[in-house]
Length: 210
Image 1 (cartoon, rainbow, N blue to C red):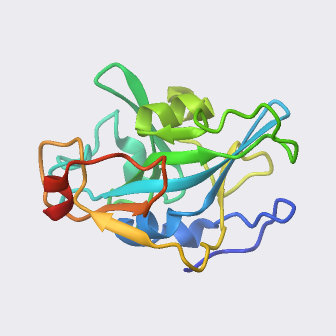
Image 2 (image 1 turned 120 degrees about the vertical axis):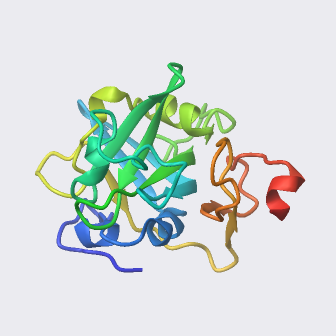
């Protein structure tokens, strides 16, 4: 993986701009297993990313950016490393991070994560509730809303959200399958997930075989 290690948050090394300035599938694959760190008014939340999906621009009919820039998806055409947050079907927020070259839209959707205990003392920690399965549960669990759209994850002294490298265990494997929950480009194999993790979306066997 390519990572810019010019900044550090304690022992956590944030992914720099160069990490996100790559093809969306490469970023989506490498974000699996990474640590998402969110800081909000003295509160620090950490979650392990376990499922992602890559979306292109003019080459991807399933992407919001397929027909060019709109007020909704304008951030996808900007620099890499910024959050693209939108409301899906008027119900829940979806969190993406912009990838690739500026002007050529692409992004990675965060589909699932596992919350870490708030401290070394995990007594009373709800392990099942920590499984943020699905884009809507992920944003609710982290407290991500439309106010975070356009947030820079790579620069500035008080970054609210950063992604940090966290090597996978030796026996861990990143699986790959077609994307789910979409009506176009259903056969594009651009979903990545930590195999066997309980927070990963459950999909039908027919989807896994496509």
